[in-house]
Amino acid sequence: MGRRPGLAVGALIGALAAAVSVQAQQPAPGAPVVVNAPAEEPVPQPPSHPIPYTQLNKPVERAEPAAPAEPPKPTGPLPRARTNTAVLQALDKVTTETMRFEVPIGKAVRYKDLVFIVRACETAAPDELAPEAAAYVVVNSQPLPQPGRIAAPARQVFKGWMFASTPSENAVEHPVYDAWLVACKTTGPSPANR
Image (cartoon, rainbow, N blue to C red; front, top):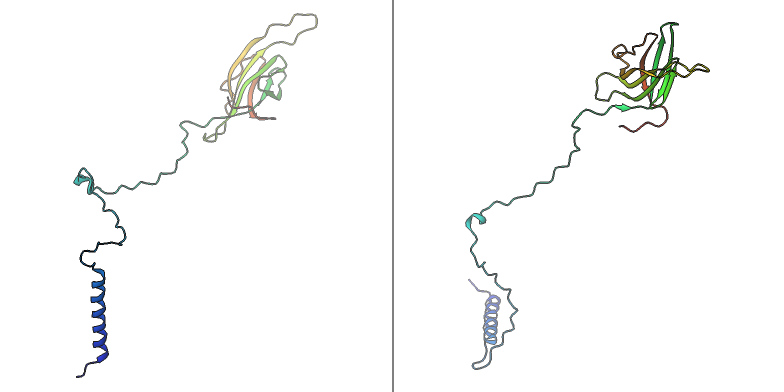
């Protein structure tokens, strides 16, 4: 089997070149050594105190994403809606005449010998089962003044809550008149909830 002369010559040239480069890198005897090697990175030093084994094997804690804040839930029942006008109905028992009229909050309205003043009128809140209207009413009996005579003093005949769904529950006790709440309604701007 014949050898290839090109391979042997190439290997011989490679070996000679390596020997020459090693000899070129070694300084001559007695010559100062100059090192042009790049600076090495510093080796990290161990901590001055040992790390406990329990801390080395501690699992990595990951921060949980914050849950979105929920709006606060109401702690009690929803407030009733306040209106600025009460609708009342009155009956004259002698003449059997009935009249429906509106009484604005805080204003006095006269029906014959009765004077009505409504302090509050409100309707059921959305979370209540039955629709309801309630009004706090003050009713005074005061006859109309006669010409040339001194007006009779007013006498309170009713003070309290009237309910539209049960008109006979809190009734006006008067020998000639009856009165009850029909509804609450808002006319114009609504009053602020008190």
